[in-house]
Length: 515
Image (tube, rainbow, N blue to C red):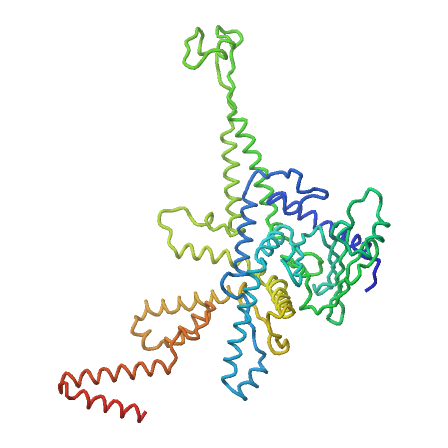
């Protein structure tokens, strides 16, 4: 990859990014203005506040829901899976070897989840998800050490291949020259203007056709020493994310963009009602200039005073816009209901009644979560898998994880769209059994349904490891045998007396030896 072209390439890619960035800023103004500020705005500037809070509440609620689904607490969101060929070879050598390997891989999964919790990955991911919802694009940097960094869309430019894979990423950061290597500071200061206090450093990430990723940094057309590196795609520390994929486009679309019309209408109606309510709340008395009552007498009189005058000379100014405000409020209510469905605000979508069953709440929640199926599909492939691969590589380099054979063991995502699919399987299974039991009775269930198979399928639908939880067939047979032996000894004691207990024990012992 040639150097000296990073700044020019970034400027060229920024021209293609302009329309996406403008839409992101429009969406940010209606939700959380600080997520994507206008060009040149800093944290010290006062940001405008929207007249409604539905957008901000929806973004935070949806981001929390996605965070809990993508990075669930106290449970791995991925599984290390053995290759089918490796499974067959192990079964031929030693059938018990697979259980030992599964146990070892489970320990690796817990170690990776511990790395996520201790390195504050969840905090950075929550910030990144909010950027995705509003702007549709964000860049994560997972260093070898330290916390994950989040770069919003106005700080990087990206180009993709026609199939959607990444071609190159240019990241721009504003730093002080003192933070640069000493051998580079003199050259950079010589290229800087007298009024410049900071300098832009460009990080170039290039994906090659050989499946490698080349990374280097450049300042004022000068390559930063020791900044060049080569990674495989699984090891690359830069993870570009997008919310909604559009075929043939370099950037994704934000979730808010789909509901921009409702948010804009709600903002305009909220502003009109707030300003109208402020005007209606103003109390203004009008005095007839030709009457006997004087305005000075009214203004100077304390409460409860007695003055000479006529009530017909005094009137109160009224807006008389109640009917118009009622139309605006009804329209706002319908818009808020639609936005509540979109942003998973379930408390606003459940009907207001005295008897709302838990089944109604569950059905409403599930119908809303199905809207996220497409989002889960994109994020599982472009976020969860790269994050797992990068964290495992970082832990292997830090000697906190054993080296894993990549050709035999690969991570597989078990949350998101896959979890929704398992949830639907669970609902169908429970509905089937409940319907059979209500229609044909519990005797038919006991006669035809395999209870062990039902327990296994229910555990699989919930993603629960049943090892050591559900009794094996050998354990059930042993317990049945022990129960039968106890009944035999009890019957012998009742019919033959205490002296027959020894004979019953000897008979049971002989039966056990024969079996």
